[in-house]
Length: 298
Image 1 (spheres, rainbow, N blue to C red):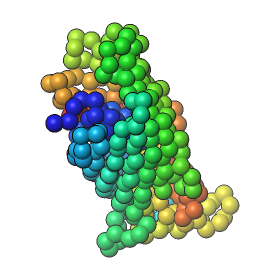
Image 2 (image 1 turned 60 degrees about the vertical axis):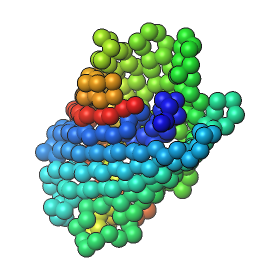
Image 3 (image 1 turned 180 degrees about the horizontal axis):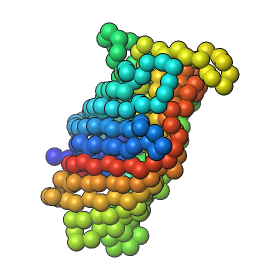
């Protein structure tokens, strides 16, 4: 049986995506936010599960993971091209992690993943629907030790073909309990401060990143009204930064209901070409954001 220390490390590493930094084994959630000054809206159903496999008694593990996202982007803005098949996107992601112990309480983690993300309006899956991710991380965890202020540090790099950059991006995450029932996280994609009360209730304030990326199988061609140039949209991308409040209620020690509400401070939804250059900004008006679900934690 995996002990709590090892499992926490593995799950924390698995959740280094745009949307999660917690020790979840499984999650199902629904996200909704309308677009201000527009009839557009964004809705997303997301589910994932992870399974750790012990390799030896020296702290080496493989962790497999699978995630499914269904994005319904209601696109009502006036355009010169057909948007009927630009409202439903799906993504399927599989990941594999290898991790082992180093000296001085450090742990090395390598992660690879493959994603199929598209509107699937054509026949089957094509090469542009397939994306890849990879991470190299070093982690030091002091949360299980009997110290006054437990902490955890993760340092590394992450590469994703969805970023449109030919180089990996740095990843930093620092967690610390600074008073009884109080803790904070500083890092990307999420920073927060939490307070736990009555054992099974947690409130937090946060700032975080969210978004999605998907291929458009039948590329859209249109004339840019400002430059009169022909533009071709090959994919759709959304990047948002939001701040807000969250609440978690533990039904059992490992099962929790949660809800987050906030307001975006950066809201960038755009169509991009094959070189990942923006060809059309769909909406950049900041708006309300709501997310809720249920999760299984260690």
